[in-house]
Image 1 (cartoon, rainbow, N blue to C red):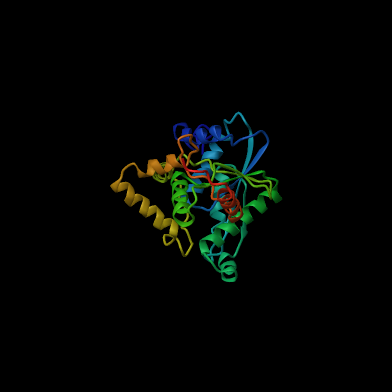
Image 2 (cartoon, one colour):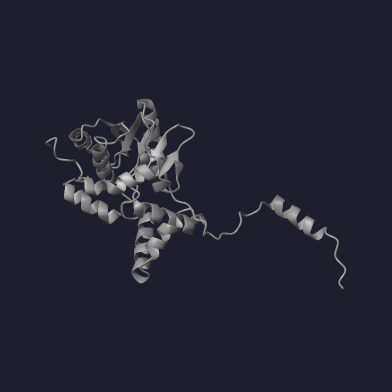
Length: 267
């Protein structure tokens, strides 16, 4: 690509710059490792970060890393290497047999896969001297995670824009959080990026997919549902939530204090 042609046009980077600046994602001397799966989201994130690297007033190093989950025999390593080389980036990869790990651990295959991918990425980042890992979670991912946690665990939580990991010393960044998935699809098509086929045998058959479809159905009936879920993820002084649930010991103490009071004489 000629030097005067951007990887990503400036107008399409405004939401990325917004996230980076709002959440203080960059610091001098940062070395950022992009979690590159080969899907549309991570490929677009790679192109965007490679573009802003040219202009950022805070310089940073950038490279990509892929976990081969061994779902299929033909891991497209060379395609990923070539993709990264197009942006002047180094590409690293490791094999992690997720299905074998799942067979030993049991439970949810998606949880097992996510756990081992995260662990491999953070470990490799440490080994290579990177202090930050950039993941390609977008706006829909955040809202779906929020809704899924509410339904399955009764918790109001989603992943954060910036997550410091105390054990590894790695900080996880999510620079695409202001982009809707539909926007990402349009940008990927516009830029001519060719995502690789997802080899995961559970692709399209997960709880997350069910939640995605459920939110879409709710939004058809109540057009502001998505925006309200998005707003509910922000800390606000308008929140009116119950206090945290007391422990059994705390409740016993409160009961004793209550019933231990001397009853007042009625007038």
